[in-house]
Amino acid sequence: MGCVCMKQRLAYEDPSILAAQTNFTVKEIKALNELFRKLSSSVNDDGVISREEFQLGLFRNSNEQSLFADRMFNLFDSNNDGVLDFGEFIRSLSTFHPDTPQVEKAIFTFKLYDIWQTGFIKREEVKKMITELLKESSLIISDDFIEAIIDKPMQRRLRKQILERDGKIDIEEWKDFAIQNPSLLKNMTIPYLKDITTTFPSFVQRSEAGDEIAY
Image (cartoon, rainbow, N blue to C red; front, side, top):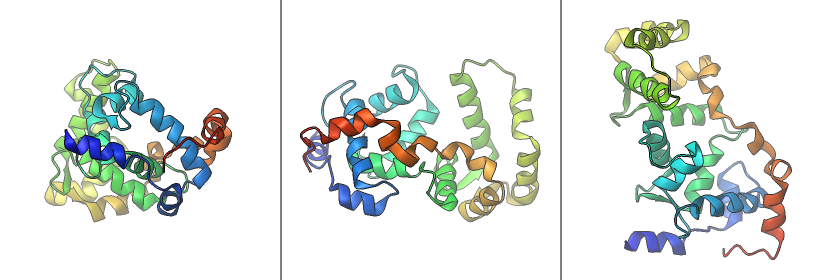
């Protein structure tokens, strides 16, 4: 478990560096540290967010298997060591900031749907992700209904433009299509990240009280 111990020592990066790399201010990053601390201590108070803690924070349930939570965690875990440190948490969360360019959001969604990590999205991967999301919402539906969801007008245009040509989508094709159809990226923006200090004043108060963060 040496890597986890190393991540505990490196958990809190310089907020000014993180501010330069993301859409958050130094003050907002310090406030987000309170959220990070809460998540990282929900199961084990070890200074990093485990997969279990991530799923607990995302879905309020750490016991059920979740493809969506697993994919999200894997994308947040940029160095693939099985836990999230503060820097990874902040950089990944910045993708959902309202000021993040749409192309960055498109790249993130491409990686999310590229379940088999082949560098392409196939129809089967889209169907699997939709099926899992509906299952997690406790909806029991038929394969025909899932196909109908995939065959909505926008998806039909996508399939006509790309899938019928070679059966898969590469990242450049996805970026072009997503930017032309911004509703695809609607869920990639979390409005309250625009002004965390106003939305979560208690986080700011705690981060300023004694300035306890060990950078």
